[in-house]
Length: 332
Ligand SMILES: NC(=O)c1ccc[n+]([C@@H]2O[C@H](COP(=O)([O-])OP(=O)(O)OC[C@H]3O[C@@H](n4cnc5c(N)ncnc54)[C@H](OP(=O)(O)O)[C@@H]3O)[C@@H](O)[C@H]2O)c1
Image 1 (cartoon, rainbow, N blue to C red):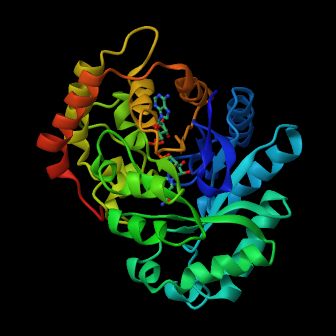
Image 2: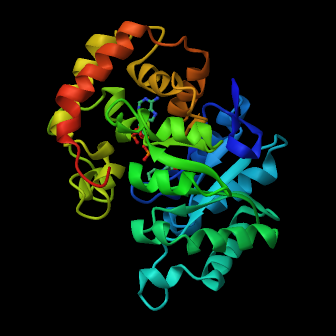
Image 3: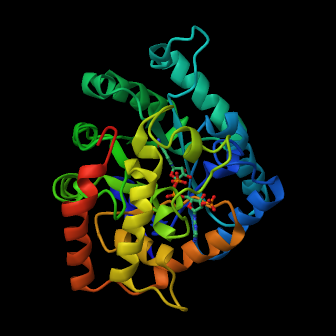
């Protein structure tokens, strides 16, 4: 496993991390707790030292499973969580964005994870205007001063939001949707982040599994799976599911990508798709999610896969520009 420094935190984190939305056993079907803990152990055995979660994944289940795992492991593991998307008591989303509520949610995450301070606390896709106002950054600065969190960052949905957050001197990281289907960030946001020493956490790196090339058109996802109920952005930002690409088109694009990348017995299409992201030096870590041990194992191994060729990068850029970009829905 290779390590890259996470922005101005100067902390070396594994270039392959682990996303744990799946381990909350909501939105992706059930992942048995024993399997979840095994996925965490297997990842860390392979050198993964960075884990992404959120207070809302399974209503705290993901954080609590990570908390159990942290008690079992002897390795140093950096856990990033998020706040801001719980439905507040007054049923008013904006009520989440006060210092008192942010402190209360952060204290709940501390209890779930069983740690004294959160390594990285992130605003979890809050409204663009909230990022613009700037006052929400002050809330995280205060939590940092109080010692509840060590660093803070923002999970964002668009280039515009990323550019706003990257300008704040306290912002350590941006969590962005970045993969072969979503290349818009390459030109402006990634260089700006690098210049400002803001780390980049690449989420949805496999476009919710589409870039593994394992689905056929017409595939039926379980009712409780967001790939069923948010396939076209019915429940939340379309970009979080299949990276905003219509499912059937995504299946076709994955086949075209397969023809360019030519996976074989040694290296899978999923691994080459993840490698494409790592080939961008501004990216600190990719955080693929996994519902199975074998997936986590294969994803962690991507650090050892050689970079793609220049011609493959050029062909993927052309495919993106000419065919994929016009199909993307949702904030971008
Ligand atoms: N708003 C936010 O801040 C936000 C939103 C989304 C995600 N995230 C974070 O980003 C992480 C990653 O994004 P994501 O999980 O949504 O999408 P993803 O990583 O693109 O896709 C994960 C899915 O891809 C499939 N997969 C993973 N590894 C595979 C492999 N080696 N071979 C074949 N299939 C494989 C699995 O699908 P099956 O389950 O079908 O096998 C897995 O559930 C999340 O876990 C979460 O931590 C944050």
